[in-house]
Image (cartoon, rainbow, N blue to C red):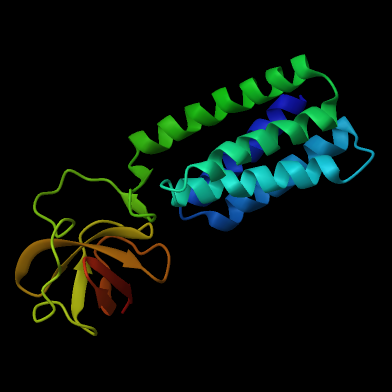
Length: 200
C-alpha cells in the first residue's frame, strides 16, 4: 500500500513535468506523498526534509543534466529520507523499487504518446516532421518579434510553428503553456535558436 502511494507521488511529478496538467500532477504528488508519510508515521521532520530536498535536486538535474552531482546527491537524500522514515532497509528498497517500476511504465507510455524532455531544458513534443531550425540560428529578418504564426503541432509548451508563407518548421516555446495544434500564435522574443511565442 505504502509503495503504491509513493509510486503515485512519483507519477504525479512525471505528469507535472511532461504534460500540460501541471496542477493536477503536482496535486497528485503532494497528496500521495503526504499520505505515504502519514501511513508510515514519522517522529521528526528530518526524513521529509531529506526526501523533499532529494526530489528537488533530482528534478533540477532533469532540467540541468550537465550539472551531474545534483542528481547523485538527490538520490542519496531521497533514499536517506525513506530509510529514516521506514527504519528498514529491505522495505525501503521494496517501496522504492515498486515506485520506480510503476513510474517507468508511465514514462514509457507518455513518451510513446509524444511527451519527452529535450536536451535544451524545455519540454517538447517530439515529431517526425521535416526541416526545422533546431540547429540553426534564426534569421531575425525573417522571424521577428510580433510575427504571426500557426502551430503545426500542439505546444506542450514546446512544438513547431510555421510563419507566413514560409514552409519551414520552427521550434518554439510557448509562454502561455499548452497551445492547441492549429492555433494562431505571435512571437514574443527571438534569441539565437530560441523563439518564444504566445497565443494570439
